[in-house]
Length: 158
Image (cartoon, rainbow, N blue to C red; front, top):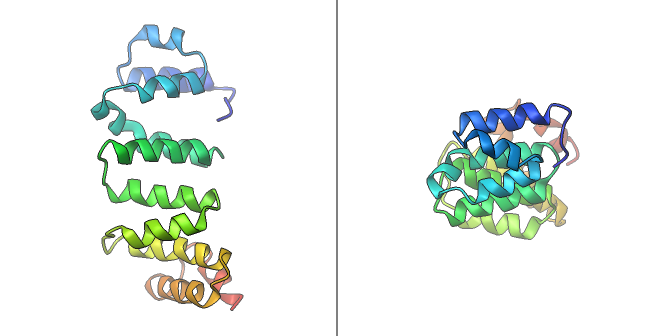
């Protein structure tokens, strides 16, 4: 993850918000070093901030690191729908489409998650050349929410 100009502010906020101790800021001068330190936190503390860490990493363009964080959360027993959805999103962003479909089909999703799962699965199906299945998934999304992301544009291609 690239360090921003205000990286020191981010580090200070993490140290303050997660009560890491003031000496930690001096030890971990780069974001990547601090993130590696955070992986060594007790599971309960790591689980408090792990999904936020994964989201920030992914949205900053480091989807590999985002996936690594999510995998650690899942390995630590985090079975929240949000973590599972971010796992699916990370796989899609990394173009690991077959793996993403396996995750989408092997996970028990709640009713609230299906719109997101169908949208992401549609991307995977399309990338794998399974256009009818992609269209079916996206039609399901459009029925649930016609304004969802770019669903009208995606369906206009079919």
